[in-house]
Each structure stands twice: as structure tokens, then as C-alpha cells.
Length: 616
Image 1 (tube, helix red, strand yellow):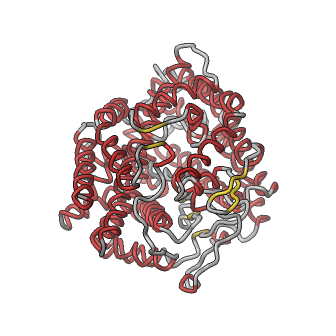
Image 2 (cartoon, rainbow, N blue to C red):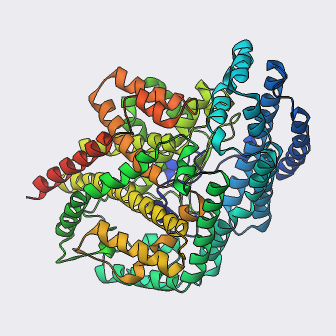
Image 3 (cartoon, rainbow, N blue to C red):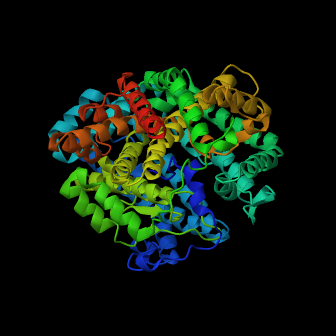
């Protein structure tokens, strides 16, 4: 599942209006609203299924103490848990999608809470399984798997459970941690409520239009052509945020302390160690990412200087990062976005192209912004027996087109994995999830650069390559460095207030952007803007590692042949059948070394070289 795209910072602009965008005539042949009846015919049917699943949970206990009896008993227990988990996932998908159509509808938000509660109950009902599997032991379990082919699809999960023996508690401890899952969502819910409804966002006038500076309005208005208006947007927005620094800081501190609690409970040396151990990613990958990004900061600073020249500015401010360096008059409605994406994905071969063409014609997507709809974009593919669903907030600019290609990368990853793998092995972790989406982005922009007919058009698309590097590699790594810093601050026993978080973040902002980019102190509160810090535990670094791996794959696909293409598609089809670092390594990209990071930074430098030649 990939329920929140890394593009949140860029894509909130797609939800720039409260009313749905008017569909173009060319769009009318394509569905623009998802059909949730593919999941459940009615909300009442959803509630009936929820009650049935909740009742079925009690059946899991019948296998407690029996997993070592025989291969047949182990298979029956694993299959029952798998089947119930699949049903819970489908319930959760529907509740999330329905809730995100309009965040102001109380009954839909309550349904989402009921789905979260059911997930927590499933965790409690199965909490005893890992401790018991450890008591059964590796030798016996491997013997059962060898004796019964029906257990083969559970092999990876069973062996992964054994791998984490040192961090698995007894039955009572696992049940307690499972029960704590729902309460630990409190910081996320508090931050969401504050930002979505409780903060009195101000209104500013930009280009003669009054805009309410909530997150959506801010993301839209910060691209204003007038520099003074951009500065006003930044100052007004972050000053409004600043009034809630203490409350947001309390929520962030609670989230960090929750992560530390889980890490200590499972006997990890740190929150970072606990976070990366789940998908078996070496801590060195996280720290190498930060190290290589810092080593490459001069390249980023060179880009800021080039951006200053392209914008015709005498100096550079943080408020100058978002307007396009050249004007692009082209508009990309839904039909055009689909057509261009299909053309750009041709290097991925006929199998991918045919599946893409078919899927993009189906009613699986909620396309346009509307009042109350969740901003941003994501794909939710956890309903294995149905198909992935996609939330967009499409506007007819290049960001809308790029978002379309990006999110369909997620959906195609899901479709390919589910076709190749059983339910138990189809779900893939975030570390590989963002690779598929970002490869699509890179293939798209390469296609647009090649097709550009004028110098300004080519500069626009080359700048999109640079912006991908800035926003997805450097910015997400800066976020990762901030996340590591706030956890280490709390782990040392130091207080983490909103003011302290802002000071840490402001220092990173200034270091990453260099001495020539002006940054006001109030912008240090930007840490409260990405919801990821409140939702997940060491999550955002995977966007930076993913764009790095995606860059390597895109270069291999565009410069290679069927072998390179098929190696990449094989990684997508692997789903969750192996650890993500190993999946990528088999496909030819080793993320445990500095090489992919250095190759991507080299690509950034070459792009800057090309842009500088164009404007020389």
C-alpha cells in the first residue's frame, strides 16, 4: 500500500480550488470518479462485512498453542489469518477512500475510525503468533514448509518472523503493543484536525484574486509571478502557522516518544534501528543517503544560482523556489495526460503498455478537486481481489501531468505484483513502491525534453528534472535528517518543544539552501507542513532512495534493451516476495553502496550543464 504520495509538497497545488475543475470535452470519454461499488455495493454492505470480520477474529484463537502440531495445522492457521487480513484490508480501503471524498462528512470519518479500530483488533488477535512461531523454532517450521507445498507462499513471512526473534515479545507483550497501535495514532489525528479545520487561515490577494492561505492555497499561491506577492504569501502563511507552534510541537513530541516507546519495547538500540529493521534495510543506507546528499550540496547551490539567473533576480529567496523558470503555455487535460503518459512509457514494452492503456480507461480514479476532498495524490492497492484505486486533484498543468504518470506508476506496480504473486506476497514496502512511480516520472520528462520544439520549452522540462532532484532527493533527505535529529534529541533525554523543532529545522534549511538563499526565521516551522512526520516512522527517506534507484533504472531502460527493461519489470513483479534491498540489487541497482547516489548527482550536474549551454 502506498497511501500518501511523496509529492504532497508539490501536489497540494492540484487541489487549488474548492469547486471541481470543469472537465474538458476530451475528458468526457474517461471516467473521472471512482466506483467504490467494486469494493462494496453500499455503505450498509460495508458495515455488515465489518461485523462479520470482527466476529471471525475469535476463530484465530482456536490455533493458539497448536502451530507446532503439524504442517497441516500451521497451514490452516496461516490461511485463516491471511484471509481475515485480506478482508480487513479491503474494509480499510473503502473506509479511507470514502472518507477522503469529503473530510467534513462525519459519518465517513467515523467509518474510517471503525476501520482503524478493526485493524488494531486484528493485531491483538494475532499478537500471539510470532512468539509461538519462535517457540516452535526454525528447524521445525522449515520442515513443515518442505513437507507441505501449500505453505510455500507463507515461507518468506515465516522466516522473516524468525529473523526478528530478538525483537519479538511474549504473547502478553505483543498483545499490549498491538493494543497501543490505535492510541498512538493520536498525534496524527491532532495535527490533521488542527491543519484541516482549526487553524484560522488568513486570506491574501495574489494577482488580483483573494486566496485563503490554508495548505492548498499556500501551495497554489507560492508560484505567483510577482516576487513581492510570493514573499507576502510565505510570510503570511508561516506567521499563521507560528501561532500554533506549541500545539504542533506537543503533537510531534508525542509522536516521537511513541516511536521511542515501540523501539524500547522491542529492544532496539534506537528508533531508527527499529524502523529500518522491519523491511530489513541496513541503517547504513539511511546514513549514506544523508552523507551523500550533504556531499552533493554544492550542486544544489549551483542550481539555485542558475534559477536566480533564469528568473532575472538580483538575489535569491526561499520564496523564489517554486515559480517556473520559463513559461509553458501547453495545457494537459486528462485525455492529454493519458496519451502522453502512454507514449512516454513505451520503453517499458508492450506488456506494460497494454495493461496501462486498459487500466487508465477504468473508473478507478477520483480525478478533480472538490470542496472537502483530501488534497494531494495517492494510490491505494491493498484490495487484492479488486484493483488499485487512485486519488488525484488534477489540474491541466505539467504538475498535473507528472502526477498522473507518477501515481499510475504505483498502480501499475500493484497490478503487476498482484498478477505475479499471491496475496501473501503481493504487497510491497515503501522502499520499492516509490521506485515505480518515480521511474514513470523520469521517463515522462525524458520524453518531454526530447519532444521540446523551442529553447524555453526545453528549459522548462530540464528544470523539471532539476526540481525532481531538489524536491525528491535533497528536500526529502533534509526531512530525513530532521527526523533523525528530533528522534536523537528525545532519545538523549532532551525536551522536544515546537520551538526546539523549529530551530533544528531552520538550521537544516539554511545549510541545504546555502548562504545565497535568504530564509526568514519564521520559515523554521515548515516541519509542521509535511504530515509524514506525524503519520509514519522514518518514512520520507525512502522517497530520496527511491528517486535515486529510479534514476538508475530509467538510465538503464532508456540506454539499454529488453534485458534491462525486463530486469526492472521483474523487480515490480516481485512485490513483497523478498526484502526490498535484495529485489533492487537483483535488478541491477545496489542501494547499499554510494554508487547510485553519486550517479544520480552526476546526472544532476549534466542537466545543469545542458541548461547553462542553452542560456549562454
